[in-house]
Length: 287
Image (cartoon, rainbow, N blue to C red):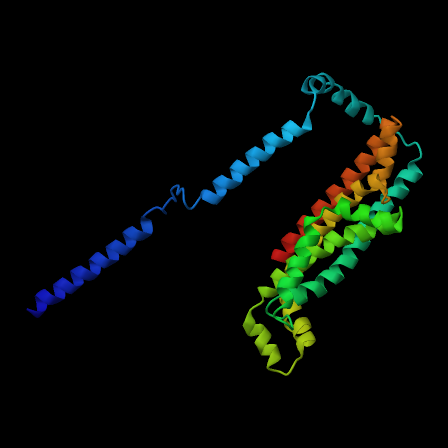
């Protein structure tokens, strides 16, 4: 009797092992379409399609004329490829202005973003009502495009690099504030409580536990934002904020395509260098 019961238990255990192995070998389930679950996606796609049709209708473009002039695009690129060093010193000076605007806006917005991010993080904010208010304020600033902020600053401060730095810092500060708040909220609560147990105040907790734990993410996001700052600063010169964008626009308006082509190449080469450096930094940070 005991022998039969032992064999039965052994057989049952073997069947459970085989069932577990079969479960592991079974291919993962493929999610099927669910109309109710995917309804928000369908609504978004329908809204996007309707917005596209409406935009094309409001554009009122002469497609026939556009098709006729499209072949001229190749000739324009060919003329721009004949680089001209005419007034190269001015081109290089405006390029350095673009880099300066990018770097200074990055530094100012990084400092302000760290402060706002610390106040917006729910796990370290001194007041519970503060995080949603700050996040709503930052979302509003991010919703307004950078050129709009620059134009608003230009109206009050006038043309020049100062307006470009200030206008660019608005959007960059909101970006850093939102990103850093999320990074700070991901810091384990055990690390924060361990530092608080030593009698540290909020500032000491931030610099001893929160900031070191988020340092890799801060470096990666800062490198990414510098790319964006440079791209936007190169364009903002066309609206009077200073930089190489103004040189490109002036050269194009006067049909000095060779000079404009050289300026575009300078912008491209530096942007490529930033991209390679940013990629290298991100890889090292992940390691």
